[in-house]
Image (cartoon, rainbow, N blue to C red; front, side, top):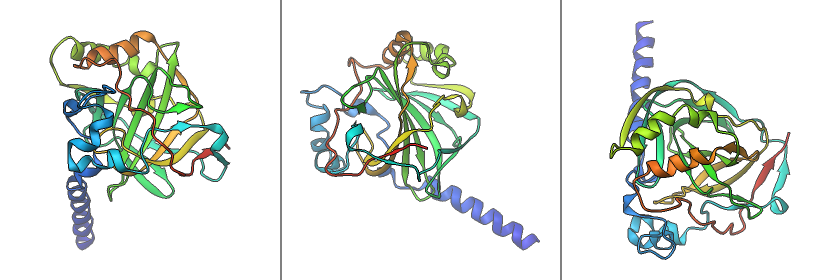
Length: 268
């Protein structure tokens, strides 16, 4: 019995160590002040792939995100199944990364299971306008929930919003966002946050293989874009932009080419 306990303890520390040393290339750049979103600027999206050799895939990759979710070219399927989310409340920190606001869970906040693989929820952040489009239409806001498996694979769940009633999850963070926006504070602990409070409210979703939407634009990211477009207030979108310490009016990367990739639409 004691031997079994030692083995369990060993594997627990091993996996914790493995998570700690996972290749950083699969991660988004923490300090986004290294680049910006000016279309014709020296550090804009068209230049990302030339700025560092580690970012070259931003220019020459063939599976880049975001993309236009065109209903006419998707394959409607029913075998993918509902999103199996096992999220849990966890301590979180708001971070101002220069061009977006990120909510990071300190030790992960549960998992999502896709095709038999478990991905740990690490963080979420917001883009405005939306990065993905549906049949060419861009929306007011897009949320990305970023997950990572034990072997370093990345899966992102995205939700898009139009202007309308306030989003309840953002409402719960209003005072913290105002605090960051009113000072040069870049990190703020917000206590326990339950990711289950992020409303998705739809069984239908798009699925495709893409990339991170900021440098290093790492590919083979598994994207799940919720089909239902939710609502957010104009003030909430404004607050997310004001809180960020930059001069840009958007932090959305332009839509990328599909290059013959498959795209599924799960419909029960």
